Length: 462
Ligand code: ATP
Image (cartoon, rainbow, N blue to C red; front, side, top):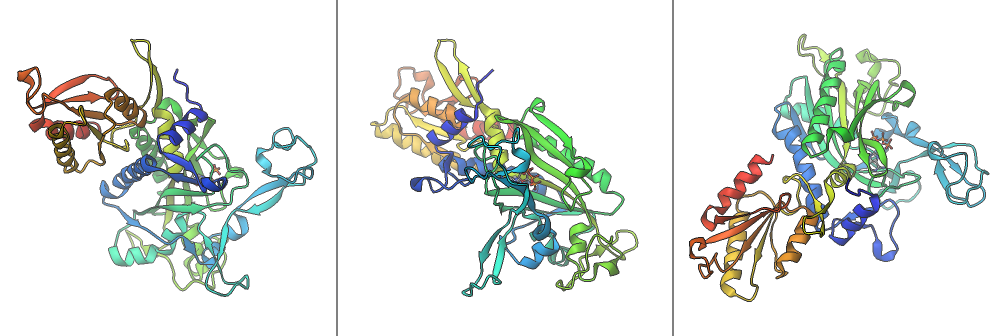
């Protein structure tokens, strides 16, 4: 079994430029991470795969990009002001603060003292001042979930694109939670990204849609390379449900620190649209939705049968981008012993997620003809539109292969004397070598056929 410790992943991420501690040069800001040159590519590729599956491959979902700064009334009526909190305890001895449900054996994790306060609710939302007046009243929240931006734009999307129930609105963006104990690298952080879909359905069909979305989301994670054995589903118990949910199924992944939530798929009923609607009682909504005097609209859509205004139920698959990145890195990280007794680290990422798709390596850096040919090949491959093509100029072929194995580059193309027709094997004139990351097998392909070959590889790998 390959060693998949969090430490080995953290080391690789720092060494190869995937993920760095936020504000690192000032000692770091806890629970905040920055994505480096390769991390940003991997993260963008994961988000692009989600967007493609949600928006491009379907005809019943539209995209949205709502603002992070959110009016306090939104988060009052969504219930987050009152209930978005974790119970926390303080250690009276060393003054550290912990999540009550994560305390082991009633002892402080830092100093071991049992002298802890009773649990108290701690609201996880970040506030920020808006405008020049700092009287404590002129503030907005940094959104704790992207979902509310979708509910607030429900009518705008409906009026501008005229979808029919069932339909969805998808969004990817940053969320902020003042987690009491951020930990486990990018698993629990204070600033993170979510990929959220709100899928609006007719009440009564919600159970069926809930099951469909759980299955669809598990399949999508498998298509990102996660093994079935490392995925589990967990149906939350009644007492564990968030204030808005009728049912939630968590999709868990075997992270290096344990089997934990990667995505939650909730049935949020009509709770949010009802809460944000003016006079929700008039719409015949449940008593749990308090009357809303702040809102100016009623958030309804035509009933597909009667055409009367209807507040749809909503199914929400909500995935963390950062947890997704950690999951695909965990799955891909492999330490291999080779036949010649050496070892290599290889990131067996699905090609569509790889930060670099192809590395083009000139075998002799000081031969202008070879360098020019390698650059010409890089430019030609770039035109395929498959992602980043990297001109690798380290000059050492062994080191280049090792580096590209470690960052998950599926293919390396080397340009040598044969490519420019000056090699010792005339029958190979005009050819390049393609090396496969996983099998390490090499094939020679004519440079004229290279783009076709590479395009085929990435098409088949999807
Ligand atoms: P947890 O129980 O782990 O705190 P949650 O149930 O509060 O998570 P949700 O509110 O369901 O999480 O958010 C949906 C998704 O957003 C989660 O499945 C996770 O992938 C991601 N997420 C939530 N909180 C964080 C965080 N602090 N850091 C990174 N990702 C997060």
